[in-house]
Length: 389
Ligand SMILES: *[C@@H]1O[C@H](CO)[C@@H](O)[C@H](O)[C@H]1NC(C)=O
Image 1 (cartoon, rainbow, N blue to C red):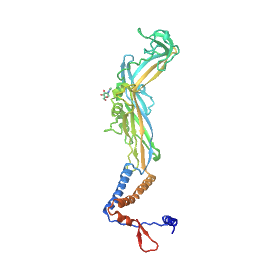
Image 2: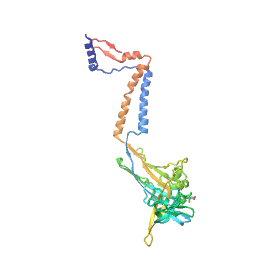
Image 3: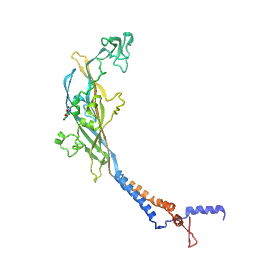
Image 4: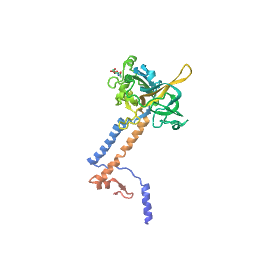
C-alpha cells in the first residue's frame, strides 16, 4: 500500500467511523467525589446566586414616576432694613409649583427700589478711577454691573469709581450676612407625593400607601424607626440624615438629594413594594477648598410707581435645593428568562464529565490503565478488540 493511500484511508476513518459511547465504570471514590463536588458547586451557583441573589428567572422593568412637593412653615425675621416680617411658603419656596426640585431660601441679600439710572460702581481695582479719562463710554465688563457712561464719580468721600448705567442703587453683596435669616426653616416640613408605574407589569403605586389615612397624614412626620411610611419630612431631619448640620448649610446654601428607591419584587410570594427613602448631599462640600462654596442665585420682583416708573427689588437668595430622585427596577417571574437560565445551567452540567475525565486521565495514579480502556477500537474482521491509546 502506498503512503498516500494509507493517509487517505486514515482520513476516511476519521470522517466515517461511527463513534458510540460505552460506559466505563471506575470504582474510585476520589473521581466520584470530584464528579459530585463539581455538580454540587454548579447546583449551589444556580440556586444560590442565579435564583436567590440575582433572581434571574424574572423579567425586569424600570420605574416611571412623577413627583410633587408641598412645603409648609412660617418664619419671622426682624432686620434693620425691612423691619419685622413674616415669610410664608409663597415667599421662600422657589419655584412655587412644587416640582421635584424645590429651593428653600434661608438667607438673602435684598436690594430694594432699583430703577434704571446711573450710579457709581462698587469700588474694586478694575472700577476705581481718578478722572473721566479712566472710564470708557459704552464699555461693559460682563463681570461688572452695567454699561460705563464715561464719567468718574464719587462713590464715597475717599473713593471715586466709573459711573454705569444700570439698575441703581447697585447690589452690595461683598459682605453677605454670616448667619442664616430664616433659621426657622429647619422646622419646615415637606410633603412628597410620588406616583410610580411599572408599565410592563401594569403596576401602579403611590408613596402614600393604602393603609395611610388622612388623620395619620395630618399628624405624622417621617422617622426611620417609628414612621418609615410617612411622606412628610422635616427639613432638618433630611439634612441631618445626609450628614450635615442644617444651620451650617443654610448660610452658604447647598443641594440635598432625596432618593426614593422603588426596587420591588412583584412575584406573589414576595408581594412587597414599598418606597425606601435615603438622603445625600449632592454638591460636594470640600472643607479644604472653600472657593465658591454653596448655592445661590438672583431674581427680581418688578413694580410700577404711580407715575409709571419701573422699579424692582433684587434678591440674591441663598438656600438649600432639594432634588428628589426616584429610581427602581421591578422583577416578576418570566418564562423566557427562566428557560434561558435553565439552559445555561444544563450547559454547565454537561461540562462536568469533561472535567472529571481530565482529572481521571491526568491526576490519578492508575491513569495509564484508565487511558488504555477509555477508547476501544473495534476491528471489523476480528472478534477481538484492540485497545487504542
Ligand atoms: C424647631 O422646633 C423645635 C421643637 O419642635 C424647637 O426646639 C426649635 O427651637 C425650633 N427651631 C427653630 C429655629 O425655631
